[in-house]
Image (tube, rainbow, N blue to C red; front, side):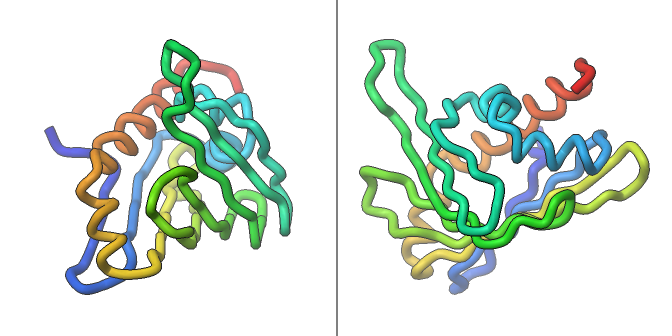
Amino acid sequence: MELKTKIQAEDNKQEILITREFDLPLELLFKAYTEAGLVEQWMGTKVLKLENQQHGGYQFETLNPKGDIVFRANGTIHEFIPNQRITRTFQMENTPFPVQLEFLEFEGLTDGTSKITIKTIYKSVEYRDQILKLPFAQGLNSAHNRLQEIFSNSDH
């Protein structure tokens, strides 16, 4: 089955480009990325902090059934333009991976469809290639599928 979330990674580059089109209005797609309760629903992680403003911070955490932390990530928001763009750092805690830089661009295609483009820049080609070996593409595609389902079936 083809993944709807596309990930482009050119050889010998420190970046990836992620694109996904949604059957959602632009405002709803942007809300899905910026309202803590909504982020938790589709990402399947707890939002500990989400300050949607320049110099704001964020932190996400996922626990296993025993209550142990299995994933924690944080970053700083450098640019926040509603319904257009978020520029932020992203760092997975307790991993060897250094901080990465993410450029999230939101685009309305029609009244009821929109697109997100995420350009992620890594410290090195080697780190980027290590990230790509993780079940990253499938996980992101599944999360985006949940985002589409949740918002298609609700009145947010």
